[in-house]
Image (cartoon, rainbow, N blue to C red; front, side, top):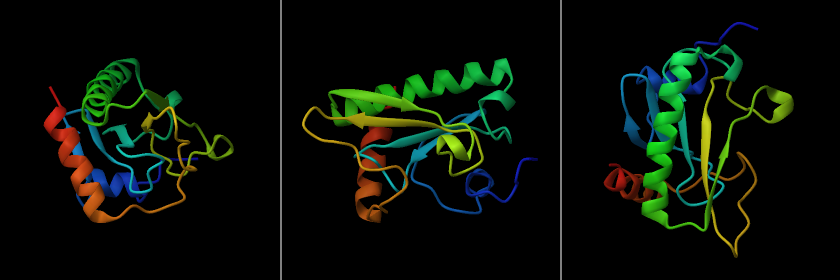
Length: 139
């Protein structure tokens, strides 16, 4: 199946839809998941139009994992979770809901279970607050 230039992440990358951006460079964009599994749930995606991990070239993969490490460190500093889950889904059967490669950074807490994937929309004010906390923690 060819890449869909009208998927929601492609529209965010083109500036056609808003996002709670926490980090951006020439290769990647990171923003909060509007249906978070926990506070601080962030998505990092390459700016290349690729559907999944297998479409990403090695050089772009280096940029992506570097951005994931940077943003995950900021999420750790901002929210002090007991752990962080990194998740990347390839294809509908694996649970991928947007067909543009993206990594999930999901803070995990010892006495709390993360919500289900893509189920509950967060309030705008909370997302704005969480994005500001992560941006402030980016080094």
